[in-house]
Image (cartoon, rainbow over all chains, first blue to last red; front, side, top):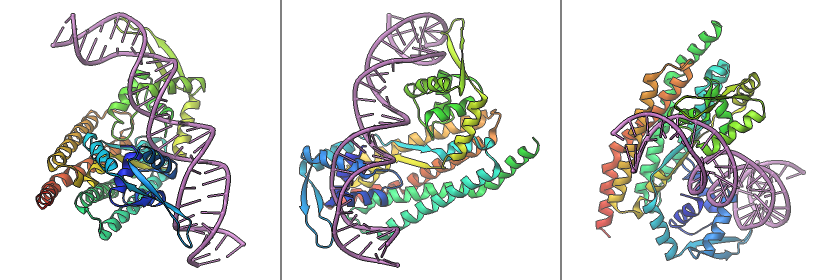
Length: 180
Length: 180
DNA sequence: CATATCATGTAACCGGTTACATGATTCC
DNA sequence: GGAATCATGTAACCGGTTACATGATATG
């Protein structure tokens, strides 16, 4: 799924500007998709060219003018078709795990620091997800709630694993160092 | 961490050809890093140019000749330095979760199919990891075993979550459909 | 006065994927 | 005879990131 398609998805939940779409990516989608302005704005421009969205210039008082995008019928049917053809892939690109695999090349305090950092990042993500779930309020919450619950379960399992095994790893690495 | 750096990492565990490095990516690293021939071969060529690896042409009987790469001292210290500077990021790009968020735009059988497919993929990954753990045998297993255990715990939590909540989601979606 | 938020866009760059090109050997 | 495995590489392409460019208003 590319950024263009996901923009259609965001707009299927309601009209929005590029700036607002970015915030949805940052909040609701942050734990499974990343996109910046540099990909969102060009995507919206191309979707407009293709007739999948329409754009209205909205003047605001005490705020810069914004461009609010609205999904067309063609846009919605294109999005539905894209979903039907999408394979449910789930890809992880983790420097955290790379560092773990080569933990023996780091000093034990560095390993301790990276585990601690990972726990912090997990907590940030977890409170993010809990905030989303408490807000709720979406028109179609069932799938989104399932996804959020899934993400939470996975993050929590990672956190538990680190907390339960960190000392074992650290002690092993320290003993190895001494014996060298 | 880019492909070049990870190739140094693989070679720090022993000499290997590009083809063999690809197999390490597919087996030991598959659940947190993906790389194809199209990125590995050019990476090895550039590492050779930079003097971080050296290459020997090995003629084989009953097999095509291969190029076996070996880490230099400069290569190892470069790899150590890269690890020390690497932030332990953990990025997920999941079409599975995108599909879940927009589950209300799919027919219930499609949602059922994507959950089933995800369970199949998780089982494939789990047996992969278990195979790695049973083989063991690596020179420096502590970090790698921790990483594999982490990946297994996370995958298992996802599997459990799907199995426990799939019927709830499916029933809710079916009821919504009837009432429309 | 500085920082944060709101607001939109472009252009260069880059890492990685896909497809193409080639060819021997082994297993079914 | 056809598929799978071993083995290496190139070139076009593509999606996305980063940095740049601009500017108003609000908050501390």
